[in-house]
Structures are given as C-alpha cells and as structure tokens.
Image (cartoon, rainbow, N blue to C red; front, side, top):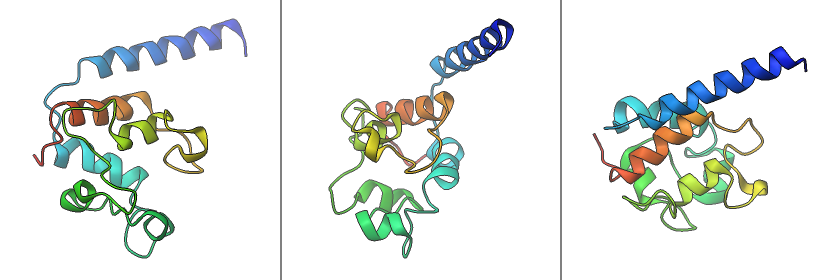
Length: 124
C-alpha cells in the first residue's frame, strides 16, 4: 500500500471511531436489530447452523435476551462482560469471533452494540 492509501485508511478509521464515540440513546429497533439482521440472523435463527449449535435466536428481542444453550448473551449495563460484545469484538477467542467465518463487524456497529448494552439493553 502506498503512503497516501495508508493515510486515507487511517483517516477514515479515525473518523468512524470518533463518530462512534458520540453514540448515545441507542434504540434496539432502529439501531441494534438491523445490525443483528445483517450479521447474525442468517445463522442464528431456527433451523440455521448457528441456532442448531447454540440454540441462540437473534431474530427477536425476547429471544436474544433469553440467550442460548451456553447461557445469557447479554448482561444489561455491562458490555465488557456480555458475551455478545466479547464475541463480536473477538475478545473471547479468535476461533469463535462472530460473525463466524465472515468479516468482523465495523467499528461503528461494534460501538453501537456496546453502547446499547451499557445503556441497559432496552427493548426500545
């Protein structure tokens, strides 16, 4: 990569991170569910491979909050210890980073999920 390309990539990443830091009052229906639909629900819905493996259904708020066979996915108010955040951020283990076998979520989506959980993971 040329120096100009590296600089542009760094600038875009920096802008995205600054924008993400100002995220507040995250709505489940407007902000979180679209992220889950785009990145999670194709595997974590009844009959899909991720659901078969984990019993986790990300298609509805109540089912997401219920968790799966490995327990609760979300600890409202605590994104640091919530499995959802650990998995999408890759903090649990690179081998189980979600979405599995796909590109990592963008910084803005990761931040949105983090803020939503820290704000109490409300169904709003």
